[in-house]
Image (tube, rainbow, N blue to C red; front, side, top):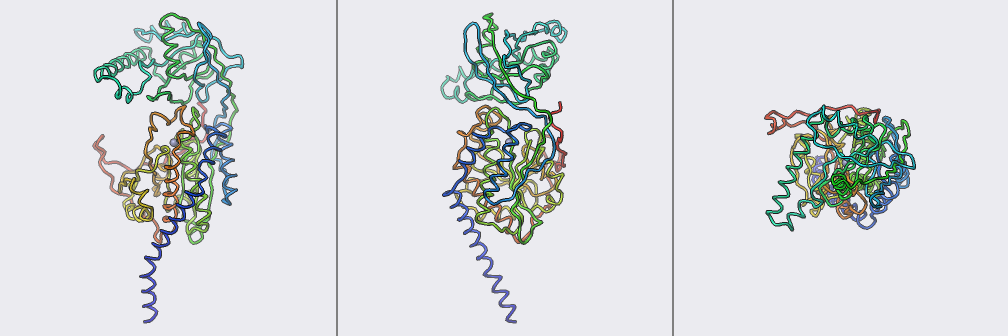
Length: 515
Ligand SMILES: [Zn+2]
């Protein structure tokens, strides 16, 4: 009888006690994150010193080694796990000058994996693609590109983003600009269609016809921002120029001012190189074969330094790991911090991890991924897991109101089919969640642009995300219950009128950059 009373008593007091511990831990995480933040130091080392992390470059490998060494300093064991190989390439000096009719250095760069030039570079005149009747007319014309640099992008009618027009233009003038621009875009599409090629395939045709190089400008609809992706030529360089310089050159060609450019682009081909994930582990004490995973992709495009895509996600997870190791060194469940390679080419690192570690995926309690910029977390979806409300809702109760008041939750939500690495785990039926950020003009200004650099990081928001991630990880690790993986009956997709289906796992590209 006595024993039963004692058990009952312990049961009753243990609930508030646990809540008390959670609040205390949350306060300790917040204090450490605020008073001893390593975020600016980590951001400096990663973005300024290592630089962008394009898969297959020596800088990507440097980043993996840096992460392992940084974890080691904090007493966390970590290793680089190879999952494939990629075409090795290293960016060199890009220097683009107009040398006639006057001399000026232009703002631009080689695209990723673009063939290079010798150190002497290419000196050549420019040509635009005229409006032609059909693909036959294009075939008859295309030899004109021989030895020339070809301007392949539509010149923008304005370098001012729409919000700037909206603020200052008369409504009539803003409407007229948009109308003119739409007409110009339509004409450009028709012109391209007539050649028989798409914007993606025309470069190859121009290369085959003997062009000296391709000049493009892929404006990102913000002052000074261009999207910088990869080239698709075999021998000739592809250069992206700023909207301002590109527009000037285009007008000069159209007016017969015969600009001459000198382009030096000294990249190096490095053959096949191994590609990795960095996996750090804080072993669990009670349930070592159950896992809470902190997740962020480590790679980036290389127009900027990958600061908000995904330097901020990376340093969020690393800083969280540091704090957990310091204040919660003996977690109940095992904590893994996965920094994935080659997300940008199709979630390759995380898909490889899912494929290579079915036992970890089977033992997952939860995964938290962050990958859409520097902003504080504002959205959290249950990803289609029927009972996600119960556990995520419970874990969020330990997070300070100052953080949760910004977060809109959706339960059970729909399973993400892509976009970032949590989707690789969701597809395998494992409870993986996206800590989705406030945009801070991500899509126009920093996502895959030349402007994705350290100065765009909003450290207060990243710090808030560290505190959130640390608390969620602690709560998930300590939860007496194993999370449910039961899937909700998914909603009807209003676009197709059909019921959504759960995404299925996909294999990674393990031999990348071959074509
Ligand atoms: Zn990303």
